[in-house]
Every structure is written in structure tokens, then in C-alpha cells.
Image 1: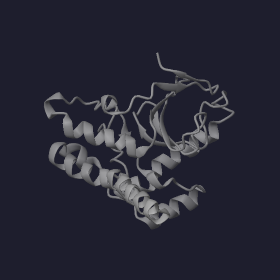
Image 2: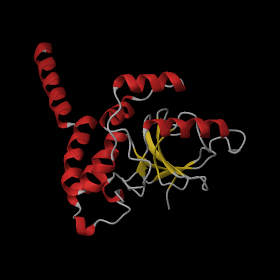
Image 3: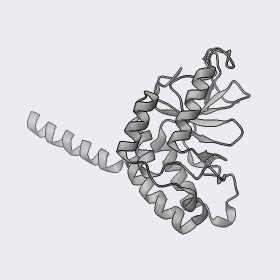
Amino acid sequence: MAKLFAFFAALLGASSASAQTSLAELLSELDMLLKSKHPELAASLRPPQSAEQIERMEARYQIVLPDEVRTLYLWHDGQDPTGFTTFANNMAFQPLSELLQTKAEFDSMIGYDFHLKNWWHQAWLPLFHNGGGDYLVVDPQGIHTGDANQLLAFYHDDKYRPIIAKDLTTFFKAVLDYYDKTSTEDMDEFHIIDDFLPNSNLSFDASGKAEPLQ
């Protein structure tokens, strides 16, 4: 009986795993979709980083990137920084070098320009930016919520930090759905994907107080 139970448990586990699309698979699908449906955005994406290049950057900045972030930069090294082509939610995708430079700059401002304790946190990784000082960041530690690798919005002039997605896989599933299900006629330059994201309705302020969004 125990062997039979173990067999069905393993079978169910395999079925569940196969039903979950990995981030690498989503990114591969997104690549093909963008080339056919949004060639301008596809052309703005830079060649990928190699595993060795990522390791050198990690050593230089004394950081270990989360697996999902490594997967993302093994796909493409952000977008061409000489122009601004929106990737999603009026944000562009930063090259890894710019992500780490931005993070180092913001880390150095804690306690000086950033007077509130949790205005910026050293764990945060600013992957996407709007060119005006606002970022979508990956939070490897799950500050305040405990949800490691959540994606949240950092606003340079606002204390609130809305939770955007529970992880990058969830975020890129919404990106893929947006570009797949939205006709080119209905797209604007902002590419807002909120309707394709699970609704968390949760934000927290720099004091660490979490509260529903109004």
C-alpha cells in the first residue's frame, strides 16, 4: 500500500511540475512572439549575458543574483540604453551592468539622501525603469511580506511600494499574455499589463506597514 501511495504521489508531482511553465520557456515563447508582433521591441533587446559574464559581474559587485534574475539575463541583457522602448508598464528593461550600478548608487544613499529606513533596501534589484527615477525591483528577501523574489514598484517621490507580482515567472506570464492577446491596434506606447496579472491589491509604505490599495 505504501509503495502504491508513493507511486501515485510521484505521478501527481510529475503532472504538477509539467503543468507549470518555467521562466526560460516563457521567455523563449516571448522572443518568438515579439519578433512577429512587435519587431521594434524585439530589435531593442540586447544579446544575452553568458554565465561567465554574470559570474564576473557578481564577483565585482559582491552579490549573488537569484536564479530567476540569472535566467532573465541569460535570455537578453536588457534593452539598448541609448533609446527608450517600453517593455511593459511604461518601463524599459535595464542591462545587467546598469542594474548593478543603479543598485550600488541607491545602496550608498541609504541614511543620507534616503532618510526613511525602508525607502530603499539593499536587497532590491532594479530590473526595469521609466527613465524618471522609478523602478520595478525584484526583492529577493521579501521585505515586510516574507515573499522572497516578489516584484514591487519603487517610486522616487512616493513612499508606497505596491506589490506587482509574486515572482518574475508570474510577471513574464502576464507579459506574454499581454503581447499574445492584445491586438497591435489596441496597443499603446505604455504596454500596461495589469489586467493580465493576478491582483494582489497589496502595498506597503516605507515604515513597513502593509495595507490594501484603495
